Image (cartoon, rainbow, N blue to C red; front, top):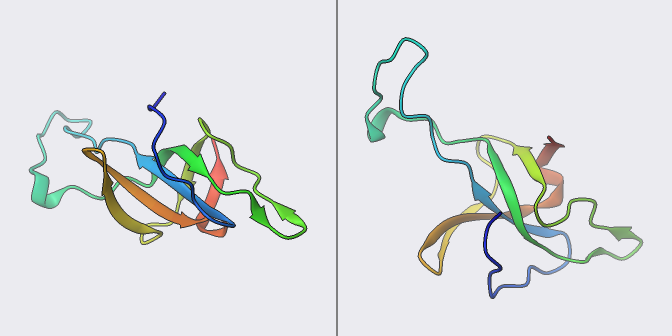
Length: 93
């Protein structure tokens, strides 16, 4: 599980640590960094309280699937993260 960050998302925002991209294909071919697809899976590391009458459903530690272009990339404490609305999350795995 990821370490606790010094960031508190507001309202229905969620901070996600993307899963690492696959290094090899099933056939063993190594994919260069420029050709890798962005991962669409990650772990929730911080979540806001939600909107009025709509509490946040995801919690810290949940593994989630999100849309390909969801969220805004940011770097915090030496790591890469995404901050997105809870509605950008497609499923909890």
